[in-house]
Length: 287
Image (cartoon, rainbow, N blue to C red; front, top):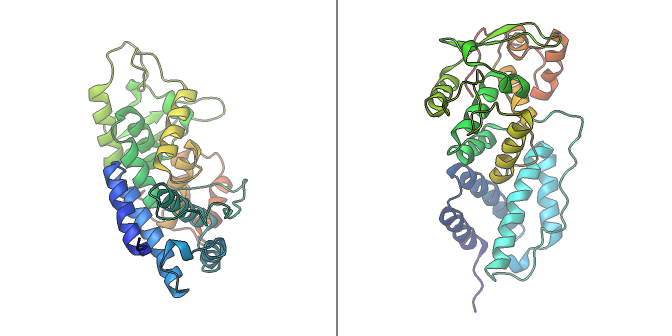
């Protein structure tokens, strides 16, 4: 039986993902990551799965790190590679997985994490049918709200173009403007919200306020389904901060929007965003 080249097998793999109804963004990411691997392997004169060994995958990983890809991005690419070779084994195109024992690059645990634009698009695709959780994710991505603030948000605090975050603990009251994506998501959810006397925006099917732990577990479930890496709901808030810093938004505006009591807290995200001098824009971006 003639062995098929990896390029053809990649095409089969992408077709398989489509048949499984994986999101378009997920398929796009897998294709890009695996095409990058195949280009690397071709330079090593490896065009068949049987030719690829563990050291090839390790060399690819290390080359990405040398090219200044972040450990997070490299880890995502490794996930795609491991999924690809598991598929090849399941379809009997190869007998072994050269990526199985290749370790992921170490990511500092104390370093905040944030999603790339491609990753939060994949997350959106996966959660799209769950209007309530999709709205919560959109609110955090577009406003940087804390999960506790989302859970305690009341209907009376939704205004025409923004929302009011009531004072709590040591946090003073603040008002947040809602951009078009956030307003649209909130409106679509409210049209389907269960009928209840509860004053809270986000409620269960029984009309009870949605608990923080339930929001967290639901979002964690969609992160796993999206297969984009190890993220938590707090990383959505970090994503809002980092993307606005990268876009040159004024530091004080970001700090007020997310509810940091000290400007120095927001400044800590500058290095994460790769920014040395904060910008001056007075308008938050749409993610």
